[in-house]
Length: 178
Image 1 (tube, one colour):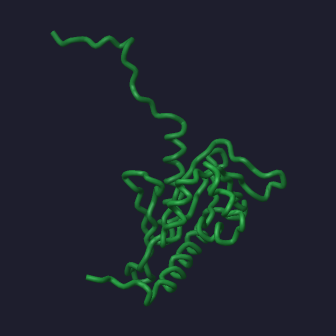
Image 2: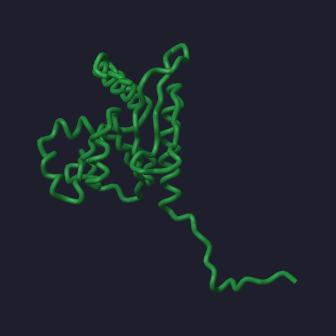
Image 3: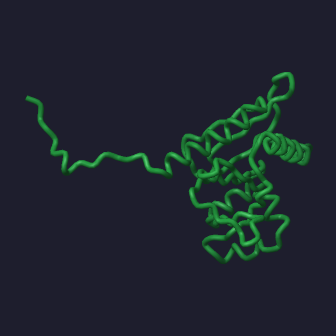
């Protein structure tokens, strides 16, 4: 006879609301990427980057470079008092990692209730803001994402331009030595 396990003592792992909205976030972003004819690759191991965005030309050939996406999902979006920005807290170690990346890093905050996502070009944001010195002495820092930065097809095409701009800047500057 097969041994019965005491069900009172065993509790199965559960799929939480956070797991569900994280998957919805990835699906939302990926749909916009695919609508542009580009490719999205979810990372298998998340160490600060959730998705890689690769670009293809009009004839289907791959383009150099990629954009790195960090996805965050919430049921409780924090709008600023004037309603023009979303306040989002970032951990310093993640921010340090993103700021060291040569590829554009885009933070995506998904509002699960509204089924909308907002984005911030991380490196450009911190280069443009003098506040970058403040986060060095803290564990976290808060960024303000403009509500006009809605993640949609136009945003994905904008990310392609950011990637092209970075690739252009890198020309003649990388030397592979043996």
